[in-house]
Image (cartoon, rainbow, N blue to C red; front, side, top):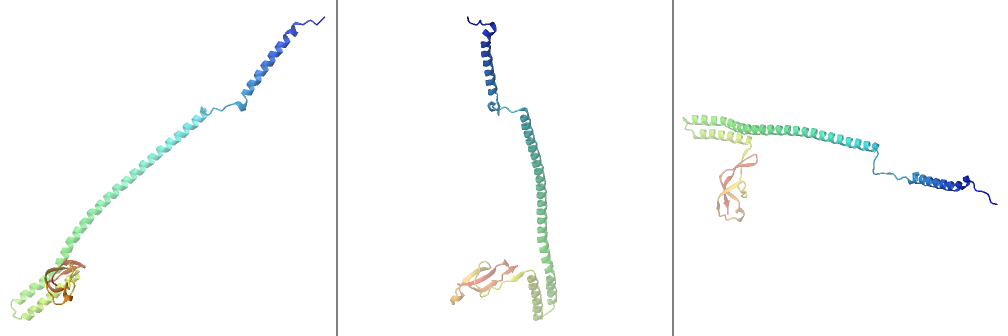
Length: 214
């Protein structure tokens, strides 16, 4: 006759099966939650990362404000220096124009002042010639005054041109007429000077009026 099944034996096998199933499920959950199975979320930043980002943005804003302030300071400095230079240039321009006008006026004054002694000599010569019948003495006096005048002109850079037997130069000479010449070598050259020309500091002061061979 077989053994009789007790109540505990009847429920033991289902319970063991259920227990094993529970343990398998727990092991699966642990495997799913293992470090290898954890996926890092790179999209959502942590509060600490948000704070760092805010600090970086704040520092950038402060640097930008400092740069703008420095640029404004430099611009104000450059503008001040520009206005100062403009004022200096305007003063220089006015001073130069004043000095130039004074130089021209004083130069004319100096030139005429040098002519006054020569005028005095002419007046004395004219006065002396009133009661004199000696033409040679009068001529001698006139030659002395003439030489004195020529010397004064040369001291001031005024020199007489010497165009005789020279090739005609339109920059220095003014041809008033042209005459036929028998010699071919005389063509284009100055034959006679009707009025002398003068230069001042190597610049033409007055063109010489000449007759040119043709």
